[in-house]
Length: 135
Image 1: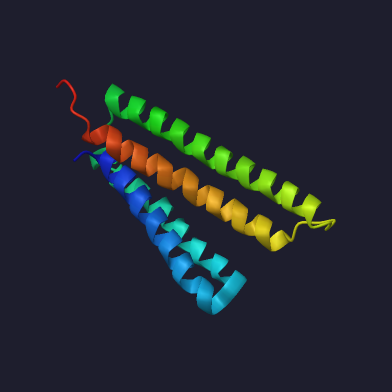
Image 2: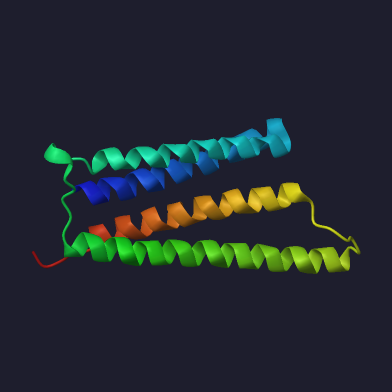
């Protein structure tokens, strides 16, 4: 397992853990459970997998291509999630005759989109690394 694959696994596990923590906290904390997304801060530690002797990062063309494709999947999934939920909110606000969407819903939406982005990116990278390739 190379360094970039470790980063992909870490991104996936951190996002799944954050979503699980938020899901478990909602019954007790309600809207304050959004603080569980603070676990996404551990994504910053993925840089530790990339450090080698002399502060050089060892990657090749395959790693670069996998990260490009995985990032594309992650960004697409996050934008799709954001667009879909915003569309549903507009329709809901129109039918319920309310003038505004509560900001707490928008806060949840931003955090969920962020988690989706890195979760899908990590999952796509793990799947792409597990595919057989020519050596």
